[in-house]
Amino acid sequence: MYPKLFEIGPVPVYSYGLMLGITFLVASALFTRELRRNGMDENIGVTVTFLCLIGGIVGAKLFYIIEEWNFGSGMPLSSFFTKDIIFSPSGLTFYGGLILAVILMLIYCRVKGLSVLKMFDLMCPGAALGYGLPDTLRD
Image (cartoon, rainbow, N blue to C red; front, side, top):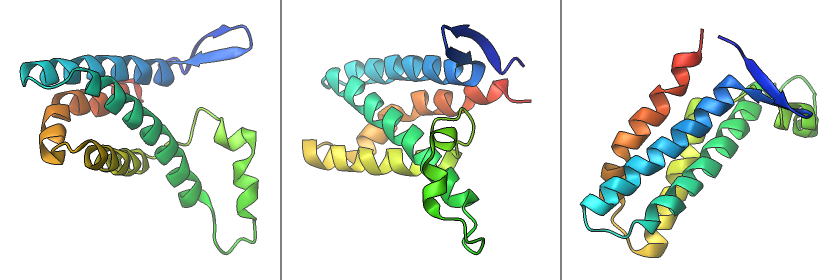
């Protein structure tokens, strides 16, 4: 595996991040296809994918910070919110992203009056692909 694929100016492109982005695009396309097949509004797919993307990344990083913060060490929590830790390519916790994405999805379904179970059912093929594909790049 090549962790860093190339750089665009000062911005490095990492293999895991690129694969994660491709996975979200493919999962969004699958979800949109499932919405169309069930006679629902296809525009829901883009909104839900965006909410899950933001919730997944933010939740994964926040749970990583919570896990790594040693409560007895005396190190202040503010030291974890430096650019070296928040914007580092490492430090994403799987279940943290899942938890926050599900919470955002529950809020969205309640606001729009959608069936939560129906939406989760339609998201399953894309979610399975989304959680399996980027992990194929790990050692």
